[in-house]
Length: 331
Ligand code: NAI
Image 1: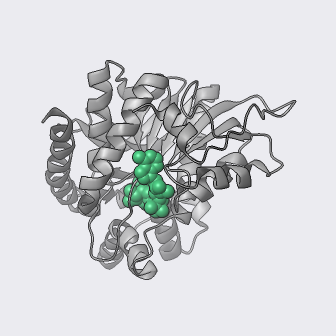
Image 2 (image 1 turned 30 degrees about the vertical axis):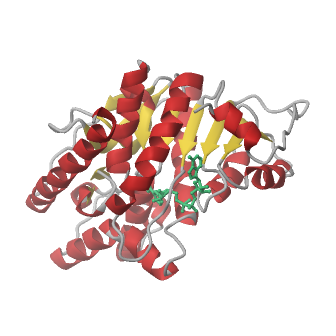
């Protein structure tokens, strides 16, 4: 499908060339799924980022309204509807249905796999060099889907495809800080594996600042970090999953990508990427970002027995989810 044509069909409102005089120099960012629960606050927060000069918003519904609204913010970036993907440096994808109580992320596969496939085909065509931040669930399967689509199109660069697991890190920092009585901004918890249930593996033995936990605290924290998403799904009671904390996490991650595109050194975040850290083709771990995307993937470091058991469980589920994504395109 031609995404640009769809853009014109959506709402029929063209913003025209509304680039403000003196618009800040910076990067061009597109959000696909911009009218959704995550998309709207994400668009607002990205419009406030000094490193963003042009923000393209795309959705299958309500895009003109969101764009008109966001475009009145007196920030440097210009919000545009047209040419959703052409010339983009970074594409963020929060398109797709969220969970309702009782659902796993994998239950979203049937709907979201097709959406991610369609959007990635358009990216391969219009901005094959863009960095892609994929949020749509199940991330453990949608990232392999995106990779297969890009491979088919001949545009796959594993360095530029990143599954967003930042919310797991954000939650881990928050919950660990609560237990330790620290400011969450001073806490750094590596979270590796994937983005669903037992595949979310917080490495509590590697928390910074160095600290120790009782067995009870480790059980509590591991369970809460792995099921933080479900906590929100249940509290929202049918109205969706995490949107505000996700938008916050997505902006934190996107900003890290943009800073490294600008040339900042030493930008390190966790992400779900093509990886050789384990025998699996994809895995989330700490990565160093640079101008080309993922420039270095860090090994997991020393794990304790609890974490080794967790890793085995995570790998088992991850392998199946990755295979499911790959088969969806290769079938
Ligand atoms: P939502 O339903 O509020 O918004 C999704 C938006 O995607 C809607 O506006 C919809 O019109 C749009 N959309 C659907 N098909 C599209 C297409 N082909 N092209 C462009 N836009 C399309 O859902 P919400 O709450 O914003 O969640 C979005 C996704 O993010 C879900 O799959 C959810 O599971 C996932 N998510 C991921 C997290 C993570 O940590 N990676 C955390 C929370 C949610």
